[in-house]
Image 1 (cartoon, helix red, strand yellow):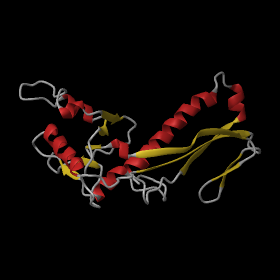
Image 2: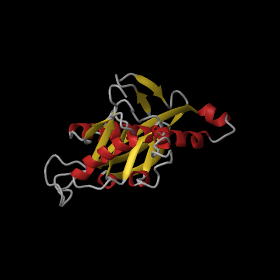
Image 3: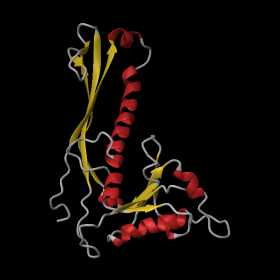
Image 4: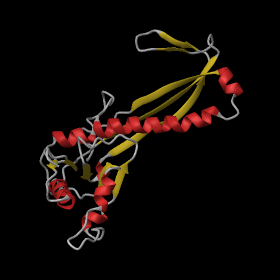
Amino acid sequence: MAWDKKFINAAELAVIVPIKENVLNDADIDIWAEVRPRIVEAFAKKIDNAMFFGVDKPTDWRAGLVPSVISAGATVTETANGLYSDINDTMVKVEESGYDVNGILGGVGLKGKFRMMLDTTGQPLNTTEIGQVRREFMDNGVWNKNTATLVVGDFNQAVYAIRQDVTYKILDQAVIQDTDGSILYNLAQDDMVALRVVMRLGWEIPNPVNALNATETRFPFSALVPGASI
């Protein structure tokens, strides 16, 4: 019932990496073994950008998490009261929608702010409820701190599904074209091979009616956004 009229649409993410056969033959290392982890890192960054901020998202994917929070009006603007107070107000937004906050998400730059989140005696606030909430910090350069300082929410409601895990195929007879149709590489003619990497996945926020909030305005996430003078 939580998924009434909600769907996860699997979209394809793919790349072709061409390389000269002579380079492969002359190298004293396994070049493809070096390339594959970098491709996976690039895929992860592309996926995070699409899921969290809607950057270059597939047309049949829902809006990104942060744009969805903004559209739902579930934002709190930073104040001079301090991070602890601001996070509390941001969590309240989620709780008013009938959800429990089980995570805080932000960029690496947020770590320093948490280390300075102290009580009146100068002690860390790790023993408080906010201090005990799980924190994740994105370190791949995706997080846009100018759009959102952090996001809190019930991350059980951010559901992703991998329809096809990362697969690899070596091509040796293909023609690689640019977006305008011009030929970039003719693998057979140019004595090249290429690694084609593909995966398919999608995600959705079910956001079902719950016992505390049955209105259409409920949303399981909220964001703390920068203030003009902060």
